[in-house]
Image 1 (cartoon, rainbow, N blue to C red):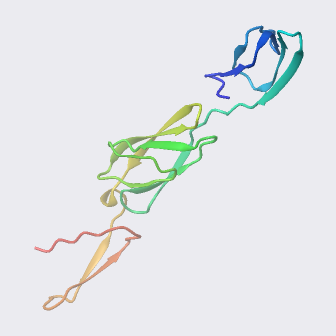
Image 2: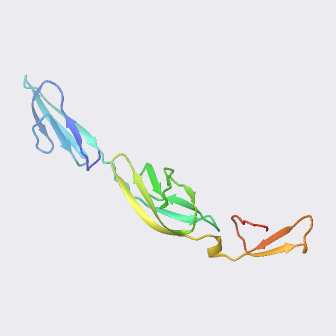
Image 3: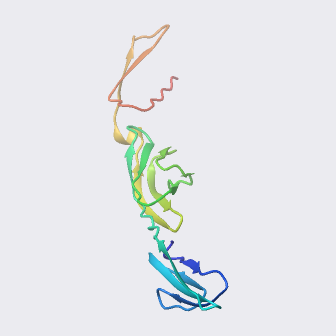
Amino acid sequence: LCPAVGESLCAVGNLTSYLWTDGSTSPCITIHTAGVWAVTATDSMGCVSTDSVAVTAIPSPVASFSYTTGGIGLSYFFTDGSSDANAWSWDFGDGSTSTQQNPSYTYGSAGAYTVRLVAYNTCDDDTLSLPLTVVGLGDRHSVDVMVSPQPASDYLRLQAHGLQSGELKVTLT
């Protein structure tokens, strides 16, 4: 049962009168709450029969997530913490999206973004948006680079100190 949508319950057969748990007297009713629903029906011969069904509600999802950085650079790992969801839609704030439950994503540049998660289930959806400030290598760390030997002839050795992980781009001119 999706409480916001409701469900129809119908008594079928060659029946002439109906009495449902809520007092309704039509062959079909629309319910919006969980519980045991019963109908007492009478046929044209005067025979009375009662039947019931237990109806359970599907809870609406609640969107929740957290994120961690992949270290130095523009990569992030997103972890779904939603309850009662079975499908996900991520918007990373730069036009890129994902439907994975726990995606990783690498931004193209540093900046301020709003990450949005929509958590879905059969009945409903819920949205959570969180701000994310992405900083690049140059924004977070300084890196000392040693070049040897000096002067270089056949080979050049670069040794970087302070670089934890990520990518170091070197341009020689």
